[in-house]
Image 1 (cartoon, helix red, strand yellow):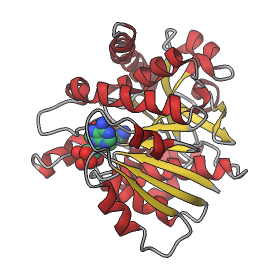
Image 2 (spheres, helix red, strand yellow):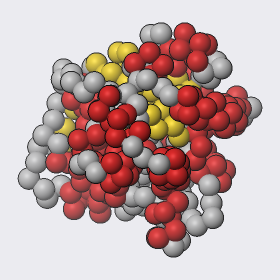
Image 3 (cartoon, helix red, strand yellow):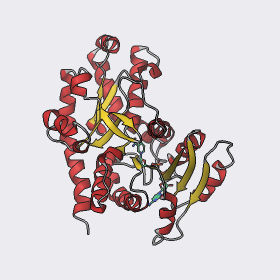
Length: 344
Ligand code: NAI
């Protein structure tokens, strides 16, 4: 049985994500932390007749560090959707100024209260918040790269849905057949659709403009939601689904379950810290330290990954997309890293 803590549990993503976690029979304890309304959300969810014991934790003031410590202690998994979402006209990068310090502080608390927990970072800009988390954990001497995950699953969920519509396949049947690598923002997102002969054949039947439109929609699909919500935030329900899809895998792996999907979901990870990651980075990714690749889990951590360039038939168009992604990613990684190394 697993203790899961959600930081930012009362938000647009946090609430439906906590609901899904509450329904997971393998979760024994669900700890809900937020600076507002955590107790209300916890009281509400605690009436659901599933095994998880739900507790809310809300700090009494900005100086109160005890409450988050109590929320986190003994956690096996911490999921973080805390921070501000985008409004129309904003990029994920525009969120950096506010969300960077929120992530830095929450991850520092994790490093002290439950350094062995798996950490799933949802808060944007993921391309920078994950490097921030890594630096904070390094400073505390508790960084385990195999347990730090940037959640990019929504990009895969969108790719499956949008491609399914185009090639007239049930979107759910594309899970494990296509992959999304790179980062989690605009043109750092790289969908790969030539991994299996069946899907590649169908994709080859698309016109160039259909293919280009598909790529653009996966890369910028988040904007459709931001625009439609018209100032009320970004993706929350589809994100809760996507975040849960990844969290569920981590929880299953903590309980000894292994995945049978040929291409598992990707996560944005610190490559030099996982087996063969440094070689992948040097050979194909211009030494990028953080990159999203399909990850294979064991006991709540990364056991290995699927090397896209060996196994996923990366096409020449896809290879060009990787090059574009790497340029954008490096700036975001540097911004995240220097935010911590330059701070006192
Ligand atoms: P929201 O504003 O509805 O919820 C955020 C929650 O975080 C609020 O309840 C707020 O009180 C809480 N919070 C703020 N500071 C906190 C702190 N220091 N400690 C604990 N809780 C804190 O925002 P929403 O829509 O839930 O989005 C959350 C984040 O997720 C945003 O950064 C958004 O950009 C990101 N996101 C990421 C996606 C991904 O694919 N990784 C997709 C969609 C959104």
